[in-house]
Length: 420
Ligand code: ZN
Ligand code: ZN
Image (spheres, rainbow, N blue to C red):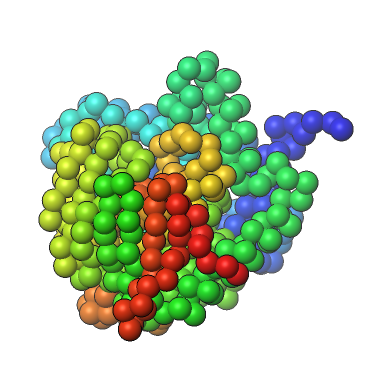
């Protein structure tokens, strides 16, 4: 057996991204970008080229990529004059909006330096982050309503790889991260597209089971966690594959292991302890606990990064409330690796998680038709933020609570307790 070269694996990855992730339709256009760094870092060009080839092979009529030099963001934070950090490249938003309005596919590539803005003036970083979130709002809204087929994937950036594997020289760290990406996205399997189709079918069955139960709340119990969260009527359990408003079934995240739904923004009570650190805006928030009352975060404590966590929660009204509940077994391929990736795309698939901030409209029946006020009235949450953090562990038990108050085990010891 000959070993697959990196180039072969990149081509397989590109094919799975185009066929499973985006499910590009003949005649569609594709735009490739990376929001956080205002463009795809140049070092990912070899992957972008493979994706372009795969997209044209699938019938795409035009592929565009916005590239950027991530260091430029750091240079700006260090050298630009005070009071200028609300300036934003609005042309990028116009470009993305124009393509989204045209029904084109959107691919976002994660993998930039997670510490790009680390150690800089937190005021400046906060202002830049805020300008990004505000300007990106119209794009986020299109994405969160599944207006088009979209997908987020990762590439092994140098700085990111070195953060995960600091004991290795950079080239070895990058190789090891690519290997992790290919394993967790099933690209190392003989037929990755077929493996994905099977995986998607299993996740869909779990989501359908939970949907049929119509729980009114979930109760989480584990070390440092005793927490009840409501599920509003009309909540939808979603898994890997979704239907876009342009009629295309797509898989928004690669990898993905989660089954998730909408929490009630007004019904969350108790204490929850994070089981993995959270890397947010270049700061590591570690060993932290969050207390909820009537859906609102009333207290945060952290051994490390407490000020950053408080700042995140204080961003806006919705940042103190929940926007997502996701169930992932502790034995997921990412959880089993046992290390942090410092990237939500991977870390959120390591264990059960919750997100503070914006809820996805598509997790509520008819939610994509509602304006902000109507969505909030139905129990949904609106915010500039959507930040996931891990709460699951091999010690976590979760019960589903039915409307008549009866309880059923959903997860035990971090694993699914429901039989399909
Ligand atoms: Zn999630
Ligand atoms: Zn999330």
